Length: 515
Image 1 (cartoon, rainbow, N blue to C red):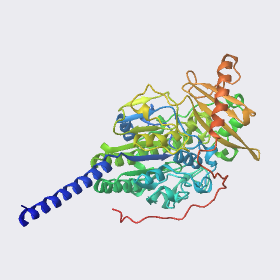
Image 2: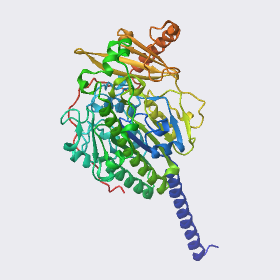
Image 3: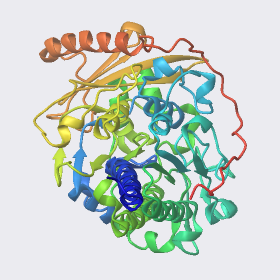
Image 4: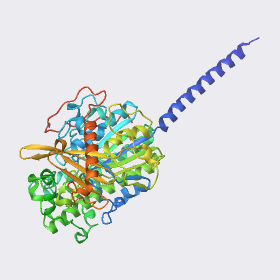
């Protein structure tokens, strides 16, 4: 017979059991949430492969080099358009520029492909906290520092627009054109500390978010976009002191080689609008290259501070780190300074990936990788489904098996102004060759380079009969690659050819009460 006392005990056991099940359920959800991998995405602006880990013995980049020791370096990674705005729109959507329709600088992505789901937007849909600090989509640099540039509101939960001493002291900057900094070679050995500079402030903000995420245990996609080493090359004096101008080498290039390449290719490395940057005095060239190296060492230090905090918080055990740049950069190679060419110097970028389950201290130098491959790779690594419109291919398999290959070539494209009109060029880079086509079906000419003998790409073999079979087979490959890159993305019904806006978006931010 059940007494009142026994009934009460049974009720207590029932409530205790319900409580335990509730705790177990909460704990299970919490463990599931914490077991998901986070992503720290770090991208520099205008950074080429002049980095210690890529074989440069002069440059001092100890922090980026140490990231390689904990991950995988790709030596044959290329952007799809060697210019900031188009490149950033491309890799943030996993689409080729012919698919985004963005081939100019000041474009808001929703004006071109309003239905697209960007990387950060996809992570938001997967209940990650998506944060941008600094430059991810296009900003005119340095004029848009402190604004939201041509950012995308749908991509982020929170944003930070750092604004530092480098912006306030622009009047001190040395430049080849008075009061012109972003598109002109310009430099300054600055007074003050790292943390007074825009990128130093950006690093502080990134560190603060890492501390908050370590406490909240919230999963994150944290994007830290540096504004350097983009011109003007501004860095505190101590980074300039790391280098002696006498140790800086400037490539010796004969202008005769310009006659061996198509006229439009020659125009890409001798743009008439940049005549002040042609045939620089050797001492001036050394000063400028030293400034670029100093600024690279400065951003390396900021990356190091962020990586230190990642390890200090323990988040490194559960976070994928991607370090890269938006395109390559010439420092006198081909007699050219800056970007926007279809040579290796213009399209090749540093790409380093580290994190749980990823091989350590490995370099994959030959396998072609495209920057649009980052999107599906991050989806694979975090166990998410890649949206069907994405054109990139995941290279996640290479991160623990370097013998694998995901593609045979990397495709890049660019538009070069030509006597009031313009010519579009396409280029593919295989593990050995580069073939570049100018104009539809190569109407304006071809270039062919064999990297086994000519890594500097100064000997155009397009008309060399010994390479006829190679040239003809690569022409078929590039034709097929261009056709595929022009296909309408699956599920994207609206595509527009946008015009440059000319203006940055207004500053916006979100409250930090979420923490």
